[in-house]
Amino acid sequence: MKIVVAFNSLSPKSHSLKEAEGWARERGAELILTHVSGNEFETLYWDTEGIGNVAIDQSQMYEIERAAYEEMQVLLEKEVQRLKKDGILVTGIMTKGDPASEIIVQAQEVDADLIIVGCHKREGYQGMIYKSIIEKSDRPVLVVPTIDPD
Image (tube, rainbow, N blue to C red):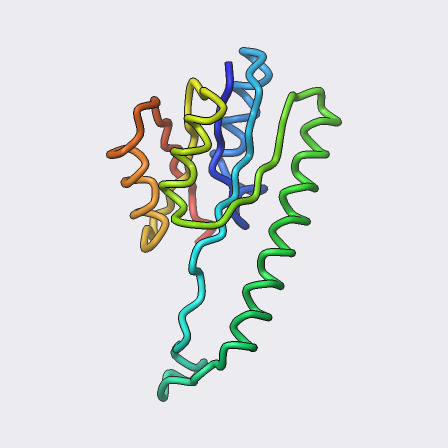
């Protein structure tokens, strides 16, 4: 059994990763932790005071995106190593593009039996991702709610 697990910066503490670990242990499933780096930053954003917009030039944008990508690589590799140490067959994959589409493509490429994604009370962009995966995937999708700490 192969399971594609949507992985983001919240994943190490998330219920979706714990659920995937349970499936791996109980069913001998192979996990494919998949992080998709999309267009996560806008060229304009609200400053911390909420007074107005602050412009970011292309070189600053590139540096922010590069640093975020590198941080995710480290985080993903750390989780892959932790799971391997616990005897779980696991692979980590980093890709770029539309998160929902890329997760679906990854599931098709590895012939996954299941996709596991998390969702949060404060859905926003994340809510759009898991809903899009459910609507477009030809694979079963398990949506695991995350309990926010507040």
